[in-house]
Length: 334
Image 1 (cartoon, one colour):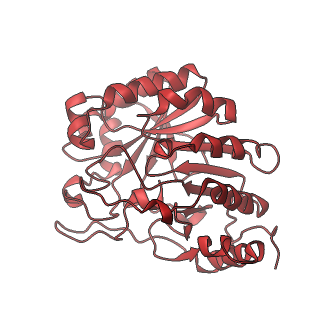
Image 2 (cartoon, one colour):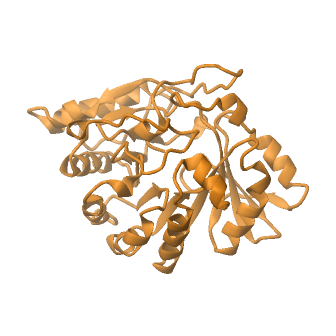
């Protein structure tokens, strides 16, 4: 059983991109993501930093050349920067890019360290620039810390892509100004449709804003030209003439993007989910902790390629409907 054979699924898609969650914990409680009283995993169930590194090296050996560290909020994990440094040493020897997604509350502390460790590009999740709205949406009054973190990251030389979940009746009217602000600071901006993952107090039917409608509205004010830019993920981009920036659309509901999927996700407990919108999974923690972990990990990754589905089946059909999946996004990693 090869520990270096490329990861190719049953539909011929080569997997080169790993989204690796280092924790399910977060210091925000965004209403579309988790309930206020979210119950997090016991720390004993979470992979150690050494196991996360070992796992990442196993993927790199199988041809994965891009790793995104996620959460939860990855920067709340103690000693997380040590993992970043360890993986950063693989850049140029199999790994092309190491990046992460963050809510930026802790970013001012870590921006310089991330840059020194080899990170060049990050995603920052931000849904509004209105402090009162941010506090209501995230249940935490931390917008000043987020903006400080963004400025620190830019000053450190990190490239930022701003990610915004489009929420009907919440931030829809703010999207043009948020995009213009991002572009004015040299950041790309990507809009994301709300995803039906995990039970939350809010009804996602009420939150759901189709990005097809958002794009139509933006075209009344801006000149949008289709771009061939690709960042390695599912976003499809346009160039905005008036701002000189780039705008992305991630549309899991209105325009399924699975045909070119090149990624898998691994939770902080070592569960590999072959699809964000599916239940197919493989236990990599058991493989890591087995007597012959190298062979067990190779077998587990081969199994993941056999069970990876052709596409997800997200739907938000009506008010009060149960989420498509019981697990929260903070568990799987964004």
